[in-house]
Amino acid sequence: MSAPTLEQFQQQVSELLLRHRSLLDVLSKYGQAGASVNRAVTKAVTECGCVELNARKQDYPEGVAWEEARTQLASHMEGDLCEHCKDVLKSELGKNLFYMSALCNLLNIKLEEVVDAESQKCSTLGLFNLT
Ligand SMILES: [Zn+2]
Image 1 (cartoon, rainbow, N blue to C red):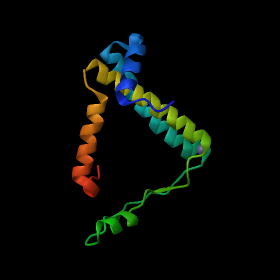
Image 2 (image 1 turned 90 degrees about the horizontal axis):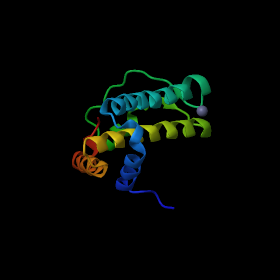
Image 3 (image 1 turned 90 degrees about the vertical axis):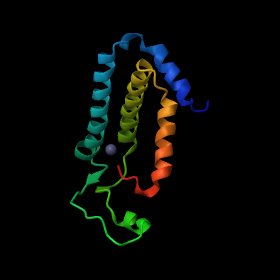
Image 4 (image 1 turned 180 degrees about the vertical axis):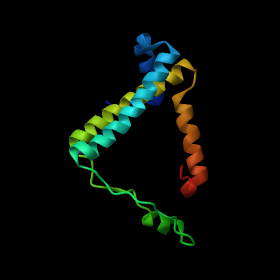
């Protein structure tokens, strides 16, 4: 089975969302889901240890080509997620997507349009899109 389109996914969410019809309920669940994503990443560092953090202030190199600057900037991270942490994180990201879709459903926003618009922005801004 191939991956569902965003439209299909959104439809699926709307069919399941009988219990979360309230905008307030969806908003708070969405916020919670975001916090759980952060928590899963944090636990990968502090409990599992598959990823290590080594962070310090970094200055943007000036006067160098952007491609080169990109290689000089650090992610402050070492290692890769282990299978367990990756599974947990994927599941939390999934919940995040679920409630994002639910929010879009309630507010009559097409997820596909959101992704399209953001993708347009990315291609317009190109490498300078830092945020
Ligand atoms: Zn891990």
